[in-house]
Image 1 (tube, rainbow, N blue to C red):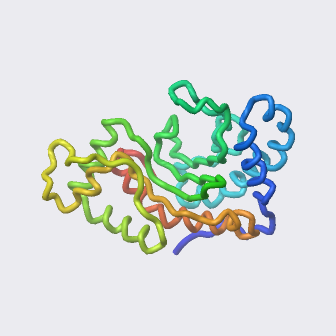
Image 2 (cartoon, rainbow, N blue to C red):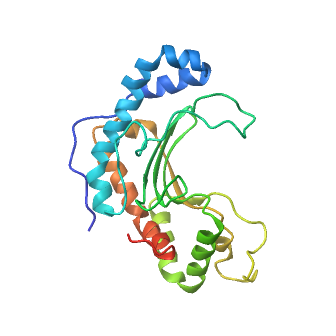
Image 3 (cartoon, rainbow, N blue to C red):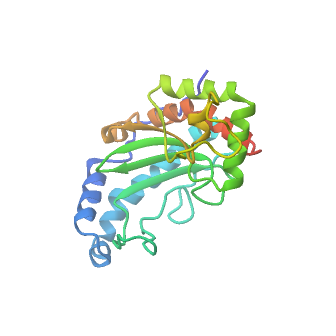
Length: 234
């Protein structure tokens, strides 16, 4: 039995949210952003924080170990500024909204969690762990090797509800695993991320909170498995 978030008649995001991201993509400079700071606050950041606040009961119903923190800085909303130090792209701002409901024991974006991505080029819901460091990656692979059934059940649930596993993978089998391993495709993964593309219009509907909560519920078995592999409570 799944737990739904309380029905809400309030929408969070609107077409104005996407319009701002589009304008930012065409005018990606600190001067332009400063001149349009009030618009950003009104049509992007405030709706995003409201979304996080309304999602909190549904997220905690899935697991009390996950966080949904509606703060401008240091919460579930990822900052708009880009870290361009090691990138050829020196534009200062992200042209997407990123929201992460991550495990409370995680310190950064590499922690297991749920994620919502909003951008002109596409919106998606995701869950799992992105770019885990080598110790965590080895632990997940060992768990899949030793406990394949629960992992395969989680994959089946995801597949049945329109999610695909995405992210980077090795070209060759990881050290210690044969190329004939029945789960070699999974063992070669460097990211364990389930992704489902969604229409932005879904996020503008009165039922957006229930919709997103339901999508994350489908991802809960994967999240539970990854936390088990990493010796984290879920």
